[in-house]
Length: 376
Image 1 (cartoon, rainbow, N blue to C red):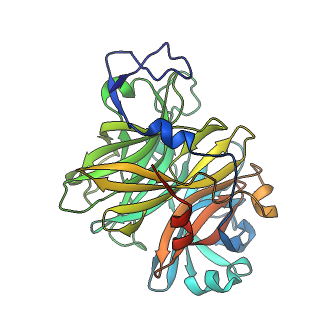
Image 2: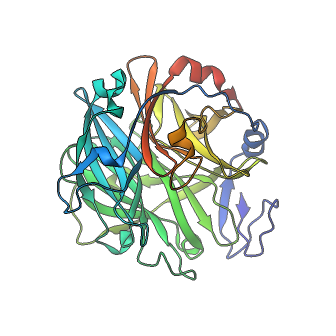
């Protein structure tokens, strides 16, 4: 256990304000130390979707300006793409739209040529996403489809406010149905009072009749950098009942599990975990180097001894900006993963943001990815 401090000095792993204790993963230093500032890019690019080929069905503006940081679900030969759209640059606020794409278009490479209709399903209409809805991650937990996105709260532009962004939650009965804004994740009171933002959040259900979901999130606290945490919520928290307004859901039992490497400014969770074995998952995350380039690496999560832990990591990055559309856009040199789903036995289909302007599609071989991971 360690404590939080308002007088935090970078490099000192001690926090001591308000007697708040947070557990630290025992192998956190080793996980950081094994990583290297090198890349072995194993992602096979399959295509890219640009905003000029997205037609908005339920908005007077015919096309968005950008379509990026997209998540996905694959069902019945279709990709349900959940994309972040920018419609104007005055406040850079975003909405989330659903785009249905035949899986064959991506696997055959024609996704880069075709035009698709989009329906805006999440917009800025509550206090938790007043200034925009960003970077969705979509997964199925139990019988519920879950979308966690970053909500820019009504306090977003207030530099003195807490919770300027929160992990907002929307639920649906069907992947192509209506999405209900359900709530948002928050930290226990003393930590919440120091939270500037919380982003890059996904959920993991380890099964085994365990009555809790694991929450993988990245809080940024005052005087402490944004790092990767794991906490828990009760499974009974999430229902399809629509609240009068989005409700706060407290994430308890938080642990700090991964921090940036020496050559990075920050790291963050990426796409929802992909199950490999009964008690093992692969999660592709992102790191931002001191050169300000976004790259991807992978970690292995293992449920062992009644707890979820980080048991492995790729020493090198597995993907970095290489194509022109990944290098040039509103934010140059970015690959930012939000979607991953296993297709068949040995393929993981990923969707990712390219330079904050386009949505990229790629695949990674499962066996090749596993061979890159070092057990820690």
